[in-house]
Image 1 (cartoon, helix red, strand yellow):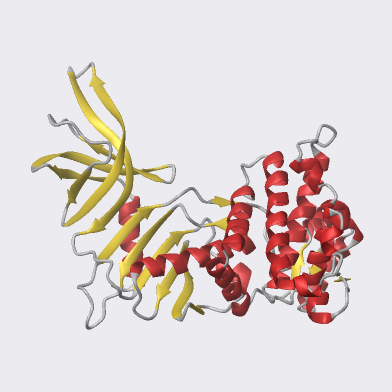
Image 2: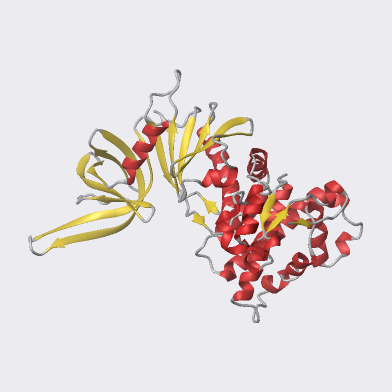
Length: 413
């Protein structure tokens, strides 16, 4: 099927489906509904007991899908006026697939629902499709309306395709603040030698999240109220801020695939950065992220560190390793000094606005380190200066640390 046909089928599945289920050779009334981002099934009255993980065939109109899920409740519906009552089983749909689905190697397209219909444009500019190669597999990242689409351009095992897609989503979540992992629809792309078309698979994943904080921006007018119209116009006219590039997102995804410490750090940041999380959770998680980055980067730059590194105080170790990646300011060093305060739970005198300021500094430093390490040489957002001033420091130019340059320099607008 074409992309527009696949999206039309997704929209069908996003509506409430009424039909019947075939369970243990019997046909019973059934319904599948999307509620708060999750798909719920309801099965009519049956005499046999249901297991906690039922499987059944759902039929509605001219299509049939095989459904697997988890029972959550047995419920009753009563209509006193009409004088009837019914009992039904309710549960969560974990996955469903077409009858002709197969996971053997092939070309696949996976769809992830985004809250923004311009997510890729806001990050990469007017670039269209992004062709990315991971582990020797050619992938294409595009957006159609509110769907982020990851497509394999060459045959690949379905499990490998999912692994590569997840690495891209982790990297994308880090730079955009939107971690897309609630659910995924995958279609097998029909080729001359492939399985027949209209072969699809749905999986419910773990909860994703979104945040007002992101790593980069190339059109500054969204922050006009914070930095002022004159500075926004100057930055845009001079093309000071540049979009994210394909080599950087590729390198981020590669690091997620190759280094489980980086994967852990970026997934933790994506989860903690979710808007509903408390400041206390964010502050503590972001310090853990920095701790993981320090240990990971240390292994890469240890030969260029001072000979007495192991005998230095923990704060100095932080600064030495991070300065090998990117220049560290005195204000950022002061932030690192708070690591023990949070990790040891001694935060009696830190709350409210101060926690917010600490969180802004943490995010900004992590963005700077990770994107510099990935090879990006544009500007990242400094969320502390963006919100607290001065506006001219709201964006930080990324410059490699002494591990590559042999110097420590910070250049800020």
